[in-house]
Image 1 (tube, rainbow, N blue to C red):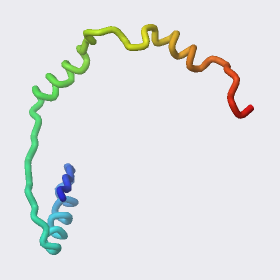
Image 2: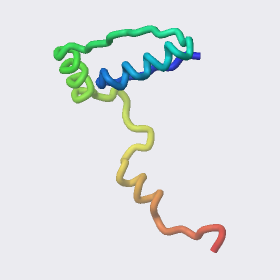
Image 3: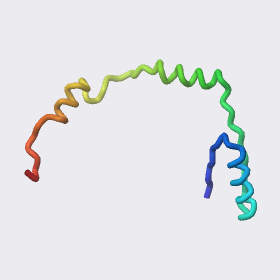
Length: 76
């Protein structure tokens, strides 16, 4: 089994690592550090996303109105 813990709190991580050592658990530490430009690039990709196909239910407002319209419910 694999368990992934992510935290910026070094003190908490130290306590978890100490407990894991007492329990004879194998610990692999990976430092994943996104630099600022990678974050900015990812943010821009998300904000500039353009769908290539149209929506599967055409007009969203019309679909929502139809879904929420008054209708006879089976238990009334």
